[in-house]
Length: 336
Image 1 (tube, rainbow, N blue to C red):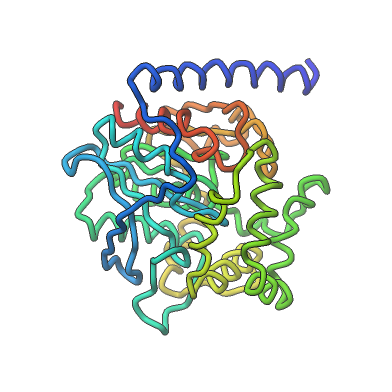
Image 2: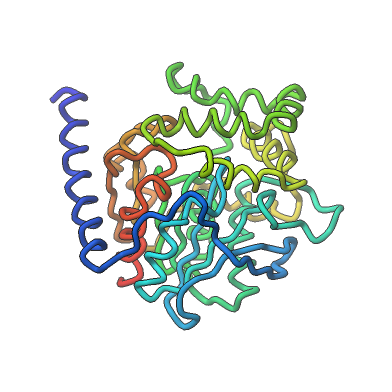
């Protein structure tokens, strides 16, 4: 069977499964898409370890908890249509700004502005501790998907289930310098740019322009408007944004040291631990970063029940481009 025929069959199956999930939400009277002017407000704040985390909350306080984690260069409004769907189904929904984004701030000016994967995962658990949340479904994409994978792998007792875009996202830092095929290397231009001081200066001066280019490249079929982009780009004016982003991409290539506070966690992540909680993994069939796959490449990293699904018409930002499919995946795990 040719790769093209196999891909078409997988996309047809993914479309059927995602369509069923989306129709289930429509039949339940789910909200329509929010206008671009809608903001997730009001924001709450909580002292959570090294951070004062700003977050949005919706739904009943005693409902099953879903924590929705955004990525780079996005913000909490990836979930502007997911959060109300889950809240309407009885979930307590928590949508935090990651370190370096929005109103989240470091509590100590001396703390390294680390963007390493261990720090992102530890932040999730610190948030849960601060809010006295014992267990939650963790769901995310991009950096947020990585944070969710780290937390699920290292603290499985705190994770009721995992939803992640692009499957297993824990970085294999030992192989960071092993090249991939040139056609995929091209899509990583920004990672290489950020390794040099010209890239740091470029991000500081042109953070909005860079973010918009990435949105367009990563989601070529997503017709977002200026208001939607500007709503998110405001979150990149955080004073720590540049430092956290630059550290994240330099650390993953071994060109920046990690924060010693996370050294033990990073050592545990070096073994690429399996994820032992139920999971739903999603791929957008128009993802400009990672092509949609059938999930087999990462299957060994999921040792509990795992469902893999291709989301038709979606690019890299699946929760904002296809909120029905993303919300349905979360609810599958909430229901257990």
